[in-house]
Each structure stands twice: as structure tokens, then as C-alpha cells.
Length: 409
Image 1 (cartoon, one colour):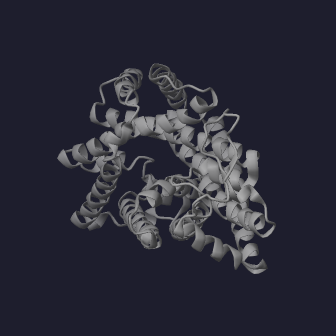
Image 2 (cartoon, helix red, strand yellow):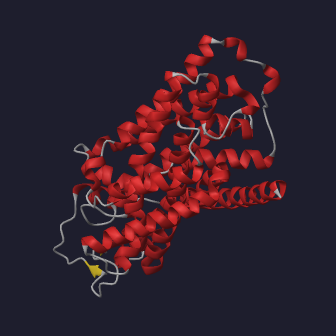
């Protein structure tokens, strides 16, 4: 959706993308620092929320993640259906939705979806193939570049949609703890995060610029639709097939994460019941996605502006500054172990004096003790800026959705 994002916000929106990538990298490093401050080998995001804000923090993080993954599920389902429709235009959209939802059920029954670890690689290949296809089209036919079909600035509503789509494309901060836990050289994590965001920025910018130069204001919300119009042959089929495969493989882990919180809350442990709950979750999400399929751009924008902004840009600095207050006040909340499942009466356990402190945790605590008032103010400003940006863009996206519905009526 990157060329569509530029079409919505104009060339100036690329400055917003650059700023968001830089901000996302900073917040990612802040989040890693937060996880270094909490005991445990594989600390989860809700556990971090509890260490920083107690019971309320844990529920807050769970709620935000739940809503973000609802949006992610809707986006993935709509992506999958629409790209399938591009390959098989004669099939009715209802049958596509029913057929692909049914086809996804066996994948969500895999309770150990570690077998789908190639999803990340498939996603990179799909994004890179789209980028190369758009670059190739532009090089092959540079006459498509026409300054009359571009906007440097559009309007506030369009810019809001654009920023929301860029933001949701940077989602995934909650996965950083797992990456950090698995990486052998912990000291290289900063370079890993920085390089990852640089590559994301390059792929997104090149895709956005080439697609917008070629299609201008007529860019569609799905770049594969633009490729279909320009080159309906093997190139389109290859790129669309990769995007379709990536979307299908993404359904299982997203549904698993989406159902994990309610399953823990209800104490669902039986493999059969977990499969039933995930099947029901998939069906409910499919119904919602079918209702929203004509508003894909707004769904992406709202998910990014509201929930990705909260999980990836607001919570990391907020948790860090609250952890610093806990530490300076001698609050034992910083040292809570919250690894027990939801509903367990022993959910909150204070680590004993004999608890082993990781090397990275000791270094992080030393760093935390050196934070001064100016440092805390900086993190407060980051969290506040994220909150203000999220509220403003979410409001604009809602107004745009209302406007779209009014225009349809």
C-alpha cells in the first residue's frame, strides 16, 4: 500500500515515513532496554506492562495487543482475498472468502507454528519482488513520469491515512523480546534493530516512489492491483502469488497470538479446545473482514494510528520512565516475576534475594540508576508525542471513514 500512501498524502508524506522509521528504531531500542530491566529469560510484553504499572499495566498491554492483532487479522484476510481475486477474477468474492477461510483452518490447528518460521523470509521476498517489479516498470517505460499527476501535499485527511498505513507497516515491536532472547551476541541487538529499520525504510521508500511515479493519483490501495493493470502476465502472477502465499501463512501465527490472551484468561489448555477457540476466532475475524473489505486503506490507517502507535511508540518510553521511578523509589514492582498464567493466584511472585540477575540486566540497572530528570523528561515527551499523534490521526481516520460511507450512501 506504499504508493497508495503517497497518493493519499503527497510527496511530503515520505518525510513522515522517514521520521516514523527513525522513531520506530528509537522506540525499539527503548523497548529492548525495558526488557533488560525485567527478570526472566523470555519476558513478554504484558509482563513488562505489569512490572511498570502493576495489574493495570498488564491488562492495558494485553488490550492494546489484542486490538492491534484484530486489525492485523482483518488486513491479512482482506489482502489474501483480494489478491486471490486478482488471479481468479471470475470467482465471486463470497466464495473466495468462504474458500480461503476454510483453507486456513488446518494451518491454525498447528498449535506449534514454529514450522512456519519461514514467514519472515517469505515476507521479505514478497516485498522485495514488488519493489523490483515497480522499479522494472519505471525503467522500462520512463515516459509514465508526468509531473501533472503528482501532489506535493494533498489534505489533512489524506496525510492522516498515509501516516496510519506507514505506521502499521512498522508494527512488530512486541516480537523484539523474542529476537533478543534468541540472539547469541546480545551486544549486537542495537545494530540489528538499526539495520532492520534502514532496510525497511529503503524498501518502503523505493516501492512508494516508483509506484507513485508510475501511477500517480490513480495508485490503488493494493500495489498488486496496479501491477495487474500494467503487466497482467507472468510478473503479476509471480508477485501476486508471493503476496498471497505470505498472507496465507501469516493467518496461523496471527490467530494464535490473537487467541492466546483469552485462552489464558479462561484457562483453556486442552489442545482440542484451543483448536476450537482458534477456529471460532478465525470465523469471527473473517466475518468482520468481509464487512470491511471495501475499506482496506482505512482499516490499515486506523490500526496503525491507534494501536500500533500505542504498542510500538507510546508504551516503550512510558514503561521505561515508570520503571525508572520504581527503581529510584525502591519499589519492588520492578523485580516482579509475572510468568504464571492469567488467573493463577500465584501470578505475581516477588523474586527472592537469591534470584539470579542476568549480566545484561545488571548493566541495564546500572544505566537506569544514572537517569536524571532531563532523561526522564525526554522519555515523557516521546510518550506524550506518540499519544497526541495517535489521537489526532485516529480522529482524522474515523472522520475519513464516515466521509467515505456518506459518499457511498
